[in-house]
Amino acid sequence: MIKLLRIQTVIVVITLFLALHNYAIADNRETIGRWIDDTPNIGSTIEIYKQKGKFNISYHFKDGSDLTEELEKKINKGKTIYRKRDRPTDYYVISKDKNLESWDNLGFIFHARPMQ
Image 1 (cartoon, rainbow, N blue to C red):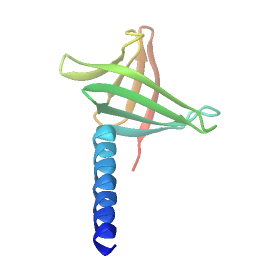
Image 2: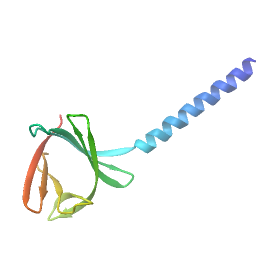
Image 3: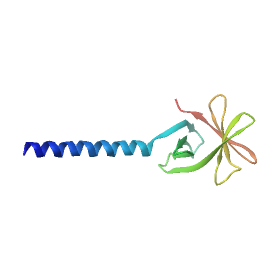
Image 4: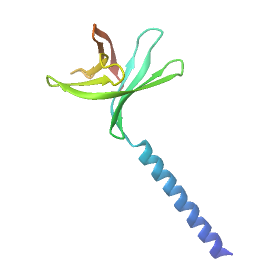
């Protein structure tokens, strides 16, 4: 009886270890940066990250909603640019002072300050 209980305990521990290990691999992502957008009535926290070889931007709005979009990373004249894959005229630049700047084909849209 005690031997069976030990075997069951070992199986449970191994199962939990594998589940946590698989979760960590699935969630393994590299954060490029996090910012706060203080735009009145819209504000959000913004994160650019790389996961499974793809760059993404996630917005977490004050009302609790979320938006995630895929980005392409490009280097242009020494600047790193993150373009929206579905709207290549929209892009983001991380400025020298670490602000996130949002641009489109008409020009500057907004900036968000880095989270501390």
